[in-house]
Length: 152
Image (cartoon, rainbow, N blue to C red; front, side, top):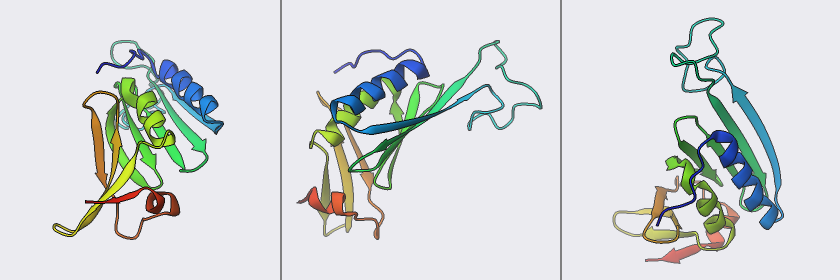
């Protein structure tokens, strides 16, 4: 399934704010604009704020206060890092971020455990056949993660 295209970091932040309003969550946004301020452009020279093509990269860090605790770091390269109660999902396409958040806050996300190989995974299904799954660190089973546990 294709998600609505979010062409810029600002479009993604606007979409995240809309999801937050729908679930009555408080939002804090920190913007980093310029090559010298973006986390993935550490090699930018002193006083250089634009990329080689003259563009001004924009990165945003969004905190959603609620249960579960979620942060979204939106990168200029069309992807995001989403952290759900300490479980990190890297390389989520920017267009998938709103559907990902709706799945988490809408009760579709769940924790799946297995005896062999041992481990627990946070599974976030999106509409269509798109699913994200990340290993939950051993000591990181928060109350929210525990409530959403399904045995395999």
